[in-house]
Image (tube, rainbow, N blue to C red; front, side, top):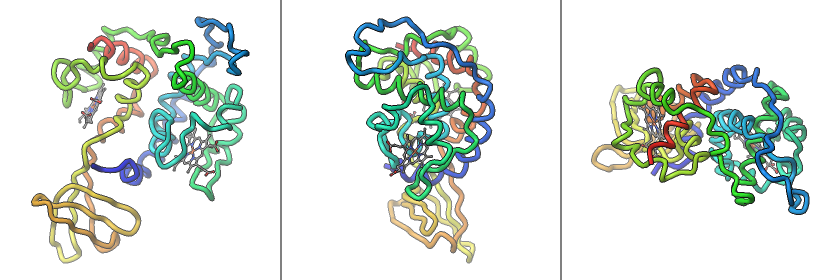
Length: 276
Ligand code: HEC
Ligand code: HEC
């Protein structure tokens, strides 16, 4: 299996680029007030903050998957970076103020990059996603992303078959049949934004002498590339001695990330939850 760490490294540069554009695209996101569709009873008693703004949380999820997910996990429960649902900084945050200030500087010396260009609206959206996740993980009040299922399933189906070109690789009666039974809506959204356990990447390595070996990528970093060829034999080279071509199975998903509008995401999710 390809480790998440591996994927992080492969996609890091691309994702970093994406981040810049994506953060711009969603920069105009509107603040809508907190939704009062859940009882505020007992929130203070349980030490919970304000009710998360679920519309903001949905926008924040997209930003998070794009900009933070490969280090912190798409659902924020940790990967190479820490589990953010246990972060005191997140717990003490109120509407993105503390988080926003932290993200502007990051902790580069500890591997947490600075996101200097993040707007207040974006920090707010990401914070609301994290707050919603904290509550969801604790399962308090039975928080469900269903509350934010405002999309139109029919429009989602059209997007799936048309503009999204999902049918190139998926079928609602084949691999995605019953997908809604496998994931809660919030996790389903994270899955289609950026699937958590992608199949291993195919790689072709060409040496300076022109010799070519193709196979399954094991690991790549700044110094070494390693792989198994088609007969299962392990190979490894110093990174700078060879030319490397990686065929990332999730390329389509990465490209889609910068194309979804908020409406596309809501509609797609509304459609996918019908695949019971
Ligand atoms: C390249 C990997 C990477 C990316 C990208 C990244 N983080 Fe981090 N993050 C880390 C690491 C590593 C730490 C732990 C730093 C430390 O040890 O102090 C961290 C720490 C944090 C913390 C502090 C946790 C605590 O309680 O101390 C928060 C909050 C956080 N990240 C949020 C985010 C958000 C939100 C994003 C996206 C906008 C993001 N991170 C993107 C790697 C990353
Ligand atoms: C070029 C191929 C390709 C395209 C186009 C594509 N996907 Fe994927 N998708 C994959 C691969 C590869 C995976 C990871 C393997 C897997 O889980 O099936 C994946 C995984 C998924 C998963 C998780 C499935 C699971 O069982 O966990 C969902 C949901 C999904 N894609 C939805 C979509 C949607 C919606 C679209 C269109 C907007 C789309 N995909 C477009 C290749 C593609």
